[in-house]
Length: 347
Image (cartoon, rainbow, N blue to C red; front, side):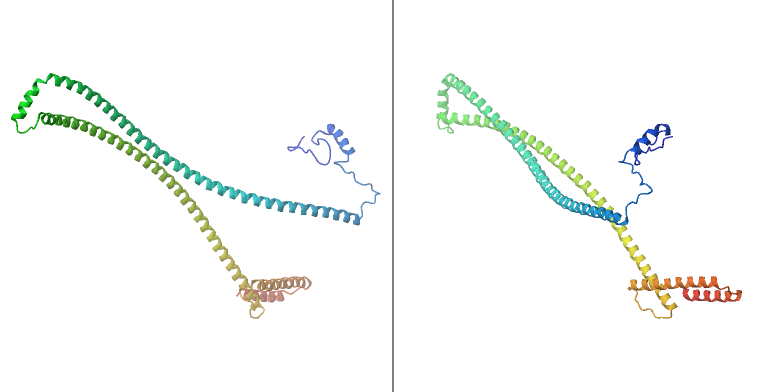
């Protein structure tokens, strides 16, 4: 029955998961080849000596050392190349960031210039339209004046008999100096009325244009305010993300500080425990402590020596107990002495 993970290569040729009847040919073929199967030496062959094995191992070791040196040199070369690539990438990143800032500023300037140009084009278009209207008005006025001139000539011809009447009025009146003066005053009054009407229409038209311009400026200001609000919302979102990142790093820093404080506390406790054990061993030997609390290596060496000595003494005591058979009374006395010594050690 085949295994869950078939074996495809174990120094032989063929599929080893076949049934024994079908695997005989593969087995014979694997025994006849020498690439994946090494035949054991005969029983009477001398084999390789220790010197030959040493030389072969020395050669393999030298080859491996050369390969290791080559791989180390290759690794150093690749590390230098990677460092150069990283520096180049950082430089490219800085240039791209600078270029991005410049392009962004350029785009903003272009947008501002476009808005100003559109505003200027609108103003020029409105002014051009107004001038065309004025030109049309002037043409209309010229045509009207020409028609008025013709009509006036006909009227003059028609009212020539009345000229005499006007002369008589001027002669009898003290206000008018001449007929021309009378006619000029009448014409002035009529022209003043026409000019007043024309100025009234122009002012009404200018007021309408100013109203349209104010509406346009109001719309542009609203669009500008909307864009500023969008920028403000983006800045607020960036600020919230930065604040969340700062909170995250503050938590990490607090955990790091707690870890450092815990490590320092454990270190102080270990130092206190080592110093206390050293003082107990010195007291057991009835001697004053020679080392201070900060001389930790010397204290540890002394504790190690004392513990090894105690272990040896314990082994010797165990051997002596095995050799000697103590009486119950002696055993009880010895046990009392050991308890007394252990109590003194603890105190």
